[in-house]
Amino acid sequence: MLLRARHLVPISGPPVEDGAVVVRGEFVEAAGPWADLGSGFTDEEIVDLGDVTLLPGFVNAHCHLDYSTLRHAILPPTSFAEWVGRINALKRTMEPDDYLAAIARGFREFGRWGATTLLNVESFPELMWKMPPPPLRTWWFYELIDVRRVVPTEEIVAGALLFFQEAGAGTREPGIQGSKEGSKTKVQGAGAAFSAEGGWLGGTGLSPHAPYTASPELYRLARDCARHAGMPWTTHLGESRDERAMFVHGQGPLHAFLVGIGRPMNDCGHGRSALGQLTAAGCLGPECIAVHLNDWEEADFALVEPGGALAGMSVVHCPLSHRYFQHPRFPLERLRALEINLCVGTDSAASEGSFSLLDELRAAAAVYPGIEAREWLETITLNPARALGLAGKLGCIRPGAWADLIALPCGDGADGAGKIHAQILSCRQPTVWQMVNGRVTNPGLL
Image (cartoon, rainbow, N blue to C red; front, side, top):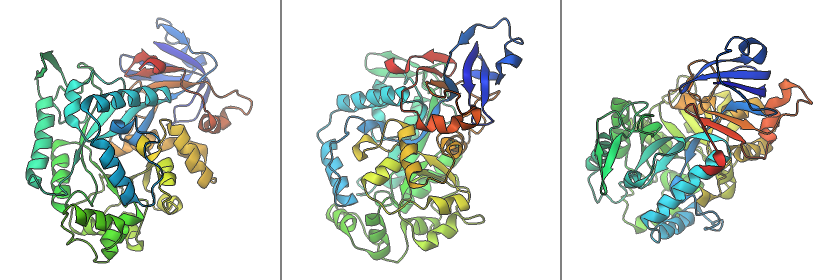
């Protein structure tokens, strides 16, 4: 298939006016000016997309599909601990069908607004057996919690790995390939799950939830198992001032809340952040995809600087969620100076995150107006691909990349192709065309 568009923005290279992309199967075979490719691939089916901007599908570096129906369900809280209590109460009222409906809505909305890949933290992975193949490329991060130690930590991680093994997971691009008999899924082979052949695109990973709900032992086991299985792993870190008060000072509303539910608090009040404690205990690594980091101790920055123990770690910022909780100013300028791989995610609808990654970028750009639009777009394309270890395969348009493409109705050409990144960032309309893994889909009907 030979695609043509008024503007081609590959992200991995300069914009091209009157651009073209050759798609062969699930991959991009070539990309460049129409004048070069239009005459070289004369036997291809030609699809002229018209007056649109063609670019790689967006990669959402952090979301919670389970909560896609909870927008405006929780008023802005006075503390993070208050929000935790409220969402836990809401979760107790929801049935499996409610979560399945939320996940389906999340897929529809994210696809409508240009995301073709999601990094989703899944609190109820057993729901995956009841889902049809997702319409978007999705990494499912199995959420791990041992706050009350009802089940031994080793069994929690073993259960997560067994779940993925039974589903046929364990590689960078795994997949579920099976057939259903009654309510039970027959898995036909390890390593086949979540494959294109089975209809499931993406992969699997582990997610110790946060340092206030996951023990250092759970972190260490999750990290080691993810490394051994070749899985990515992610976690919430430095999420709030309440978390810092809990770990650094041994006080605050989150500390009181967790004392109330029986969490051991012997790791609190020692003058060190959770990030510092977990690093010193050998529980983290530079391959970790660290979400939020809204609140830092000064000593934490030395851990992520070049030569530090966590140098190269990817950090995911969720701008609208950050604003909802009224966190302190995110230290974006300082992280950029340390060459952190910065990604952007949407968090969840329950914390007022958007289904549109461009909404998230605009919110961030309003706080940091000196950063170029091109760099913002990299935080939802090239950078999360790098975090997954998939640079060159995801979040770009180049030979050998997956054919995950979107077309936006923006870019009138008045300012020339050099301004097209800013025009994309300012686009408030949904996608008008979408391709996932070489297959054209209708983003409005996902």
